Amino acid sequence: MADNDSFMTSINAFVATAKANQEEVIRATGIKILARLVDMSPVGNPEVWAVNQTAVAYNKEVFDHNEALKSDAANLTKTGRLKRKARVSDGMDVKAPAGYTGGRFRGNWQVSLDAPATGETGVIDKSGGATKAAGGLVMASFKVGTKSIYFCNNVPYAYLLEFGHSKQAPGGMVRITAEEFQRFFTESVQEVRP
Image 1 (cartoon, one colour):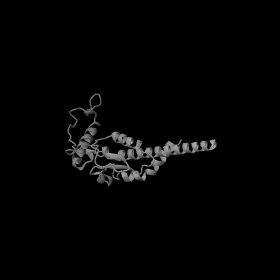
Image 2 (cartoon, helix red, strand yellow):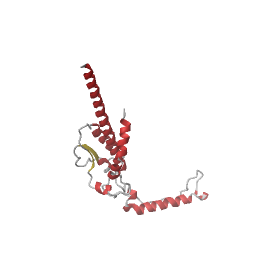
Image 3 (cartoon, helix red, strand yellow):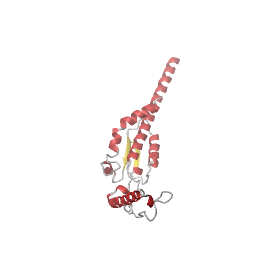
Image 4 (spheres, helix red, strand yellow):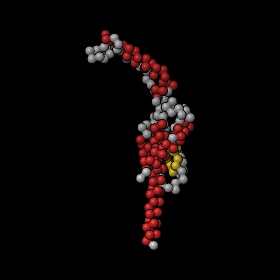
């Protein structure tokens, strides 16, 4: 009878360890997926917008002209800087459209368990750090028995960004990350192995 109790204790310990490892692998994989989605998400760069191309081109020409002037020693100060008389001090402003706030898309990635998130977060997160931290908290609550993990971005222009509207992410984010799932999973299994 004591042998049976010892055997059952060993089996229960094995099952508990396997279950804990399974949860850790899924949590780590989910965190990697979210990090990839957030890192790939474009953050508006007004210098690449069509509305600013004239200003960007003009500013580049002014910069190039000033750089070319540096090749003539007569245009330089004793410390090697371009003299004020020689330097062209002109430029055009690069502007963002009214109401633009960079980081809105990145800040709207949401992780949820068993049901997709609805609505926007209202978070502006250019770096993505707060978004990753919030998603990590959700992933920390993952338990065996959870049926689904959702990664959602509910801003109205998310579909456009996924299908090439941004030069920063011409191939989207979700499709590329989905192709990388196996790598994330394999890495997580190797990290969690006892």
